[in-house]
Length: 281
Image (cartoon, rainbow, N blue to C red; front, side, top):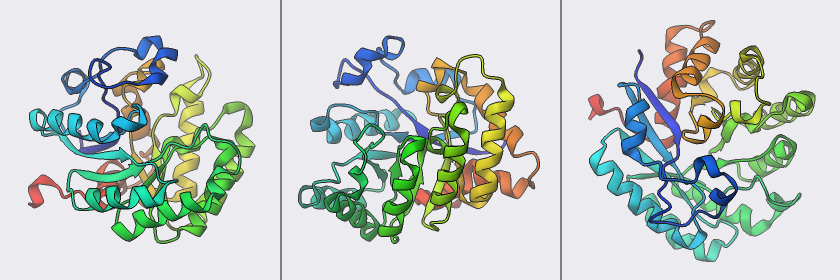
């Protein structure tokens, strides 16, 4: 198995931090810490933690909790933190501190459930531009109908690398709209696409060929040099298991040379999130 850097793994423990959204997801409403991920983790896989929607006031505590997990599990290579970017005056100091912290490799402010036009907010855009100035990428979690907005946001924040989570959350019954939006986003050279979180967006019992065709389309639209592997564990457990998802992404890559596979499975994430390979230290 090739060396892999999974750049989208959630960890949480409701006994330590509060996650209001878990009340609506009973199958996930329990601790999912690094010890449990270690049971399903293929040996060569290292991971980047993705903020997990804890209460807003606990964002810094979340990073410190994950840092403690990483001290016990060295395959946790970094963390993507939540920052309320729509309040740039408050966010500026947090961004400055995270930019100086080698463990924090990016920022996400989840916008998938915001009202139409939220990304036009000038304060939000200023916060995203601050990330670019600090050298931190912005993970954008949006739904397919928000892709045109994201394209405009990326154009207005051209110096910030934007990572599109979960291929923009396509739906099989709205594929044309997703395809068009994906192409608009891909025109912005500062956007890369994360091959993650796809199976939970499709209806149960959707044939794997559908997910495979969506992966092929994303790879064609962005090009393999702008695609990154992610699992979305443990949310992915609602629809699939870790090995099955990894196999599907690797199947999508079979038409490409091994150097491309290495880029998608590891190298692109190392570049975007500025993580050095351990053997290169």
